[in-house]
Amino acid sequence: MKKKCIAALVLTVALASQPVWAFAANSPTSNGSIGSSSSSDGSGSIGSSSSNKGTTSTNSNTTVTVSATGVKTTGATTSASQTGSTIGVAVDTVTTTGQQVTTNSKGEAVIGDTAVAFADSTAATAGLPSDVVSAINDINAGKPLNEVVQGVDLTGFNALTGTHAIITKDANTGTVKTGPVEVSLYVPNLVANVNNVQLLFYNNATGQWQLIPAVKVDPVTKTVAVNVPGSGTLSVVYK
View: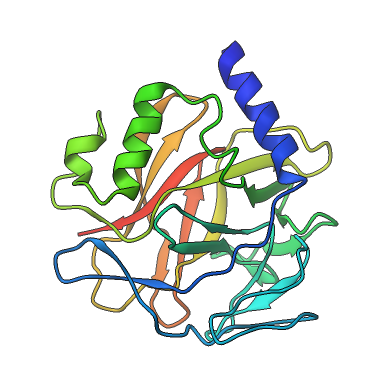
């Protein structure tokens, strides 16, 4: 418990200096592995310069970027994995239950009384058990999920994204909190022929891996709505 508290504190502090990530989208290959794509996602940014890859020159967690599909994310709600895959928590939108998703002064997504953001790469695995860190590295190396993650039946599942460390906090106090909150994840390499999309999630509070079914999958906007139980490490997976 002490180790988890220390890890949570490190992650919370790290958010204050999180950079804006910029990279090209990835796409699933024919064998189900994570493959790089050099094509543009067509995204641009508000209040800063952008390239055909949707990069942002302003190093600000509050900078809003709009994807080609109209999804808005901020620097604080965008993350890049070791594989180069990108993911984001959509802002300026509503959940499937009609709850508003706004942003705070730090650029974090705010859903009800919960603030959501991603940890940067240096803090993503801080304080985690060595076997979990090993599994995370193996996922990002493209190894079969059912061979590297223990305690979850991942037979037939493949990783659509690399791993990303998400932080859920009390929107008023900024302290790390647990409890389900619906987030809409922007996944640039989500395509219509991907089936059984779920979230592979390592729960920091329980110390366990779990599969979380998607609430809604929209390949048009390239978003996956899912209820995350708190802070942890996630990867979007599919069969």
